[in-house]
Amino acid sequence: MVITPPVPFHWIWKAKLITRIKFNTWLLFVDRLNMRNVLHRKKHLEEGYNYVMCQEGVEEMTMHLFFECTSSVTRWFMLGVQWGLQGSIF
Image (cartoon, rainbow, N blue to C red; front, top):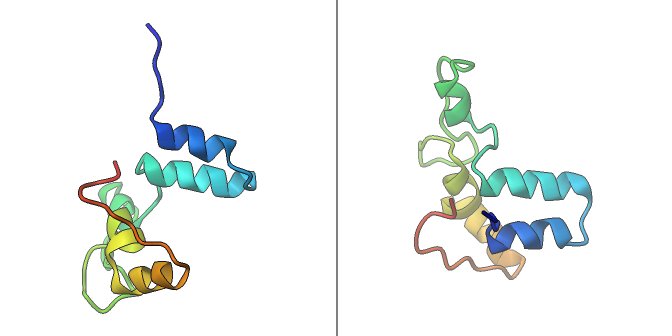
């Protein structure tokens, strides 16, 4: 049986980027970045696991940090990137 990885994984590893960026992008796609909600679940954070960069008072999660927060959406827009995410990237 041959397992074919999703197309974004091919793009990540073949991109002309430094390895650190490739690795962090891969961690983003597999939902393994150490966000505060993950650290809270692993009992490394007892309190204060809301996202500190936004005033919305939401839990720091990957989707919010990179795609939903008004601060990050503004920065993506300034770079000319608009995400058409209908569902989860995971």
